[in-house]
Length: 361
Image (cartoon, rainbow, N blue to C red):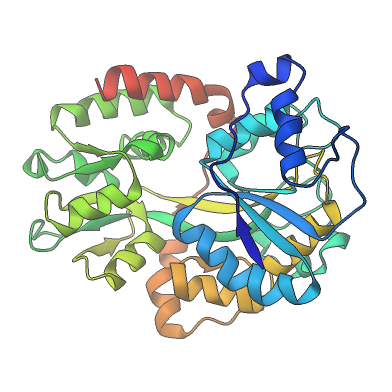
């Protein structure tokens, strides 16, 4: 059984400095603490902090309902954006027990939390399906995130609007495409890294990225607040060229949006999201049960079908035609580039500041 919280309480650092009263109140509401703040006896409730929308619904459909519920676990979803949830974890750090057992995050999200010592170092022996994780994403006792799904940043184009297929990210900078290019505000960090690749640098080359983004600004790209908003722009042919996860492209193709994909020669930035456990999670047993369930072949295969993301385990079976659509050939796999996580951790505020004050302004 999966439940959703109503409008989740966003706990700020100020709340925490005032003694964490708001956080304790939220925990009591979830049934994790009694009225005195003492931990209740272990129960079968597992609180999962995750993004809302389709992802949250599919976690329920493919993991919580078929795999967790039959074992007596009651899943509660706390749907918020990743930054709001990270702030909440930080605000609750002073509490003996936090209000979440699991946080769904991208690998690029966890740097600050690990630096602050707020995440549990994962023990692979507590979720045996971890032995099937692909080598690129393997978990050991020093890992903080268990992978769930992955994809790569490719170029999307509408053949009607862009008759000559693009071959690289840098093609977005071609003046002939002025007014046809879309970018996504919430993906500012990935777009910044992509700009660095387009300029011939590496994902952590901020100076190259800034120069390239200012050049792109001159071509008047359309900036959309979310992935869904950009999809609407593609559907109405307001734009015809962008970069996006290949998995999203498959979803949009399935929805009838007329886009094709190209593996860019200047690099395919990988995206991996997974699950972390806050150090003060009240139900770590339930958290590990969920991590294990998320790696079951049936769950991994279902996400490949439903969302177009690649499995992270070797024993998942994906139909050849689907694998061709969502995966990467051997030649394309050679173009995969990992995000510079150290760069993102150190420069995250600077990236946002530049994006808001110079690129978007």
